[in-house]
Length: 538
Ligand SMILES: Nc1ncnc2c1ncn2[C@@H]1O[C@H](COP(=O)(O)OP(=O)(O)O)[C@@H](O)[C@H]1O
Ligand SMILES: O=P(O)(O)OC[C@H]1O[C@](O)(COP(=O)(O)O)[C@@H](O)[C@@H]1O
Ligand SMILES: [Mg+2]
Image (tube, rainbow, N blue to C red; front, side, top):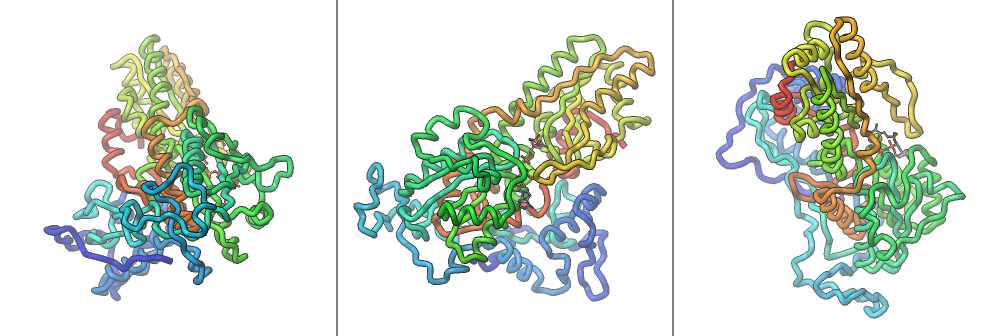
């Protein structure tokens, strides 16, 4: 594995503050944060100090002894180990490296590898490669106190600790000969704007390296075992215009074969580069495939590209499709607004996606400026009672004559009937909070004898099916290209992402250890509250 030893300490002029945290250390000085508590319960308490706990649990550092003068160095060493990206050389120490075939400067169109007789046209003087030791800073804010909005602290004093992750991009040395590569692409889980853009860029970039055998595995992991489904040959010509429409050229699915079955199929098909586009579940699968390939001593690169409009993957500024989803949600919100404002005493309700994370609902509410009440899974609320949503709605109808609510699908699950059902991937099937809110509003106003018209819009699948907008188009392009660069560089069990506007490689387990959620103490949620003007509903 490639890792970087911990570097410098902090930005000039910023002195770590002494601890003001209410959390206590034991007599031995060891940090006593309760790592047993589940992240969700820690996060919903709203306590700053517990936020530190959550970070500790996430980073596996609950046993840090902060009285040890070297704790910071030890933390950074541990961090570098955790965020090291697995490389083929971990398993095949003698794996030969070759000069890269990805050299835009000296590339003749299109590369004909046979012409190079084993010596690829790498240009050492070209500064277009990424050095393996290049790093990107994962966190860029120095919170001087755990009480700062959104503070993520490692120790009670919120000491500045640099956390470096690996920079993505083409390397000068590659570990696969393009003519020996058979690359496969698979898209799993639900649809997401931009899937076709990523597929397209992966294919185009593979071809630039000189790969001739590129296939798509239809309908997610399912396509690896279903005899009815055969692999789809891909080329620049096939994918040229696919980004002009939404969906996935390859199709998607949930559930599917076991990991050994998938790897058996990869062996049968001769696949030695696998690009996996999907969310948390898909990435868990990709990491398991990577480990199974290692166990079987297969020289294979497995690289993920995070796909989820819910934006619930850790450590990334955003995942592709999220921006588009927020933009598309504006149409639904605007319709609800127009309906609500045109009818007498009307309330518009829009349900947006977000299984456990309210990012789309929050950002769409912020972007539209038309929302009076935004409800997300991370922030508990009551419908009834003096501080409930319904009381506030009554106030809005009395004063504004209309109101618009935006609710994330995972919000208020304690208020709706649970089915205990799971989908084919094992995800809990949620109760319909949108329909529930609609019914409760109707009942509430009817019982009061006040006229109220409720217009309910669920644009879920309309949002997911659209093509990527310009910003997501660019993100997909970079992520798709970087996925190929990562695989050729010999990395496996990694995923690609954008971190503080820079592009990075991250080890898969670190990005899926739990779903990223909206921090109710973050500035963004506070901005959303400022914008809607809604009170607390508890
Ligand atoms: N823990 C897991 N290990 C291996 N494969 C998984 C795991 N969780 C989900 N999968 C597989 O990943 C695919 C996509 O998972 P799903 O949860 O539906 O979507 P997403 O990847 O968007 O979260 C499915 O084929 C599912 O069977
Ligand atoms: O109806 P489906 O296809 O199961 O998808 C619904 C789910 O898809 C999502 O949009 C995204 O889920 P994935 O990231 O797992 O694809 C969730 O918000 C939603 O619960
Ligand atoms: Mg999922």
